[in-house]
Length: 250
Image (cartoon, rainbow, N blue to C red; front, side, top):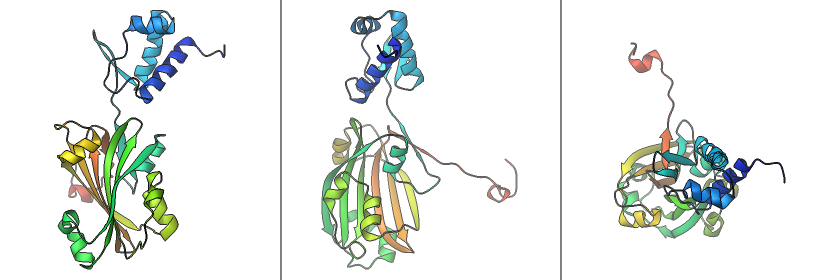
């Protein structure tokens, strides 16, 4: 024996089953009597493990109905420049990429709708258009469509981006240095194709995140990201001074 308390071993085993999808999100855990039989422990030992799972955010308790796997929601802070992958990595969560599509285009319906593109890019600009499905653990999280001007990034190795970060790739191979960026967030009803990729029901809304990245006043990247509405919370912190209140008090 390694000295690990029995309740801790049960806690760790159930955690692994939640993480690998054996117990999916929102599903009920086996009944307590079943778990007691499975682990050969008393009900008090099992409940100690379940209490730990509850305290650490793995399960929720429904009085009279048992214990359910809690749906995961990730935090994204908006107070500074960020990447979704970097933010998740900071939470010790690995993000996986699936390249859905790549093509070199002149223009598409989305780019044509962006005022900034019409104002700052020549009409004959060619764009690398990369569409990736980004997933964590057992479920898809977002669809990211990236537009990069060919004039700044002449060639493009899609294979590297199957497992790596787009920003890291551009910084390493093209010496890209983002000097400023703006971001627009808006609610979105996803298209049928987006719902299929994200594996979500028709009633679930998403968040559309549009980011425009500049390198010394030159537009070098546009990202249109459709994020599952049930999986992300966006957080912002603001500092209040008298000028922001019109010189008055709250």
